[in-house]
Image (cartoon, rainbow, N blue to C red; front, side):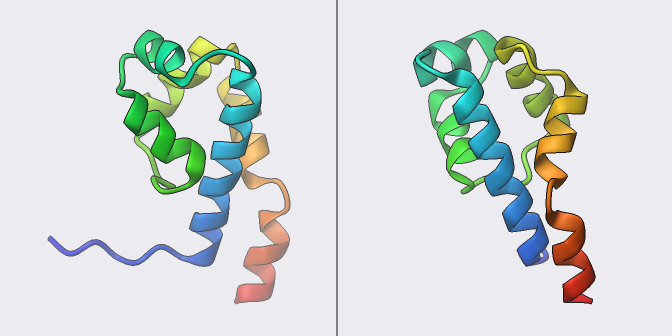
Amino acid sequence: MVRTPLTPWERQRGEQLGALLREARGARSMVEVAAAAGLSAETLRKIETGRAPTPAFFTVAAVATVLGLSLDQVAAACTEGLDEMARLAG
């Protein structure tokens, strides 16, 4: 199965998600947070760096829970400023 290329909007949203999670993680180690969320440190690293810009819902929910973020906070942070970008794109 061939994956459809991501749009600039999707890539930007993934970068915003990564930035939010890095900021919320603070001084906690990536290994500690990943283990508490039930995923590998490499998966969390990919999400935080934007290399996995469209992680599964339950992955995001697990990390958000460990970091004390609500899904409303995550959604708001990941769409901030993107409405304008989507409007300009088409």
